[in-house]
Structures are given as C-alpha cells and as structure tokens.
Image 1 (cartoon, rainbow, N blue to C red):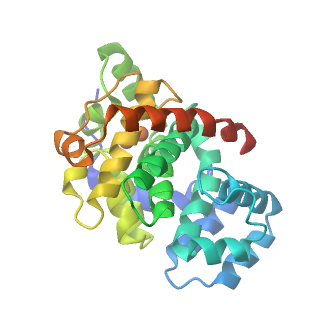
Image 2: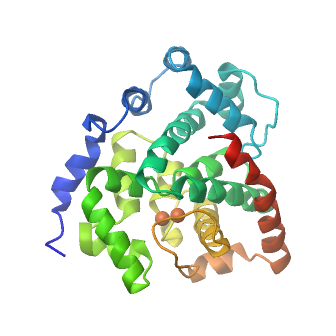
Image 3: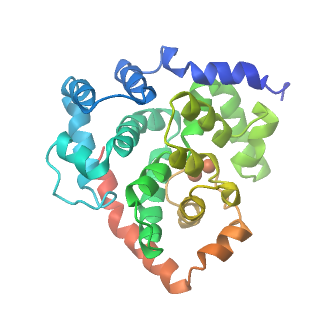
Length: 278
Ligand SMILES: [Fe+2]
Ligand SMILES: [Fe+2]
C-alpha cells in the first residue's frame, strides 16, 4: 500500500464528482437540483419530465413496501405532497444512485435497499414519526463507498481484496488507504449539497451512532439495520464480515428477540420488491 491520499486532494475530487465523465448526464443534472436548497417543485417536475424512466422508477419506489404507500401514489406531484421536497430529493438520488451502486459494487444496491426496509420496520416499532427520513438515510448510508469507488477505483479494489485476505470489515481499513472513511466522504458531499441535517447525521454517523445529536435513535436504527442485513447475508457491502453493534446503540434500542425476528420476517417479505425496481 502506498501513502494515503492527501485528504484535501480527495475532498476536492469528491466534491467535483459531477465532473467525472463516468457519471451519467441525468445524474449530473440531478446533482445540480439536489445542491440547490431553493429548488422548486416545478424545477423537479421539469427535470423528471425529461426522463420518464426515472419517473417510473421513483413511483415504483414510492409505492413499494419501502415507502409505505403501496399502490397509492400515481404522480410525482402527489409524491412531493406525501414525502416533502427533501425526502423526494433523497429518493431521486436513491433511484438514480442505484445505477451507480450497481456499477460500483455488485450487491451494494441490494445491501442498501434491504437496510432501508429493515430500518423502516425498526423505526416504526420505535415510534419514529418520519419514516421516510429513515428509509432514505438507510438507502444512501453507504453512498461514500460509491463516491470512493468512482474517484479511486483501483485503491478501493485493493481495499476490497485486503478486507477479504485479512478477514476484516472494509470500513476499518479505509482510513489506512484514504485517511478518511466512507461516512466522512459522504459528509463532504452532503455538506456541499446542503443536505438536510438529519440525513447528514444518519449517513455520516451510521458507524458511530452515539455521536448523532439531532437524530440519535434514527442513526442507531440504521446502524443496527446495516449489521442485521450483513448478518442475514443479503447483498454485498465490500466484505463478508459482520461488525459488532455499538454497545450504546444496542442498549438504547433495547430490541427483544421477538422484535428482531419479526423484523427479519418483514425483510424477507419485502425483498421481492427489489426485483421490481430494476
Ligand atoms: Fe457503512
Ligand atoms: Fe452498509
């Protein structure tokens, strides 16, 4: 392994991810929309009208068990009313990023989607009101890996190989390669994009959930869902190992075996919908 990449250089690269030739044009336009905190509904509608395939995918996602409005949402306008513009931004990103995820790492989309299903189920059990925020946070929790893979594909492949050889969790090795981890990298871009604070915390702290100030329970839920999905062996997040649950999260979540088992059952039922989204 060579010297770690200078974090300043890496940050500049991550922040200009939209300049990469390998990023599709639709995505670049979407990044502009997401980056603009004052974007209007009509601008989103115009963007979507140029891409009927994306509209279909967004509506399928909204109507899937993941978002809890099965079969009820038939237009983007309706989706905005039900979800709010910030969640819709996240959802649009999710619907588009899945293409990047599939290109970046086989199985990462499945990992992310399953994590969103599990996180949503757990959030409902814990009485969290804004379930969409949790779903979207979970769907995008590993977006930092996608960014690193697109900007540093060779280094990231070496990292995956090393994790396999050393039987390590990939997140634990990232710092040695990049000086930072995938949640740090995601946070850089989310700051540039003025992402809603709560989503930034869920995504930025999903491996250190005790650090979240605004949405600690939601962040612990996504942290735990991530590990549950790995334990279930669904999808692929860069390595085949199961990291420990943070003790604070374990204690604060206080889940019973019954709750964990019923969540796993709901996950099995919902995962059929993954095929429907592709
Ligand atoms: Fe992660
Ligand atoms: Fe993950």
